[in-house]
Image 1 (cartoon, rainbow, N blue to C red):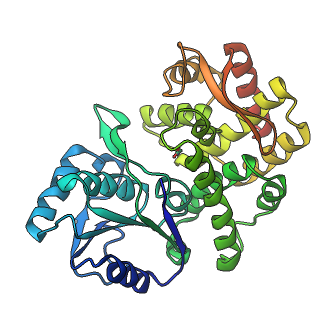
Image 2 (image 1 turned 90 degrees about the vertical axis):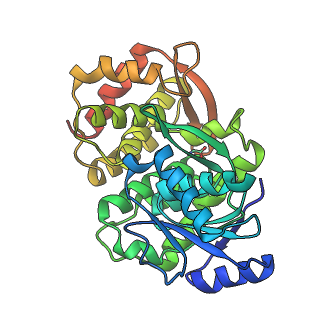
Length: 343
Ligand code: GLY
């Protein structure tokens, strides 16, 4: 699943090179209402923004527009936006006339570090997230930090949680460096590009070894068994939390479990806990929510035989996928998570 990663702020020149090298005579961009004006493209298919629009209906709208614009297998599709646009646009391109080449240009840190890379495409179906889709990698992913200046801070922090996750899977040096990050300082683009480059490489390396998530790719779900449960419960209760906030809280809970089961160093749990307490406020759960959270975790895509399953660490960089976790251990981890967050 080769993907060409291009780190540059010069998006239009890079697309021009891809068009010239590939001999593409028609390029069609897919963007949402927020990203359509970010670059001066000629043929733009604009879709509604937000996860609620990540539907088959929006996909058919894209196919209809592609028909009208005369897209062929020799055309090029460019997806410009966050994870919703790259997932959905990627699926539409990969299936139109059995596959049109597409390039992802993520405009959020969360999209850049996760969704745009690794070939997962699809849409929500019957109330289930990403229920229908295909592994279909973009031929190229253009990674630029220039879009991040206009991102709300919560959106930056949300993406940063995934950057932190990738450091926890790979490098203690990078993990400690990230824990010194100051969100109140202006964006240092050079430094952020380097952090992004390292984080994306972690994903690329894992995906290269296990493109279709038969094993090792599950490591990328670190923090997500707990994180997804918190995110789902917050949605059900109509008080949605940003994905990355839920992941940050999930990373702490799963670091605690890693300590309980594999002696993951307590000093690293404490450092992580302090960083998350200081930067990811608003944890809206109490011990009355535990039963619902555990039930959600048992129904997680990663769950095996109804057991709660997590990726855990014996130390930063040493991951163990598919670890069954008992309800008692998970309850203890949720208690300790709330302690770390000062609740
Ligand atoms: N978001 C995790 C993965 O792409 O496998």
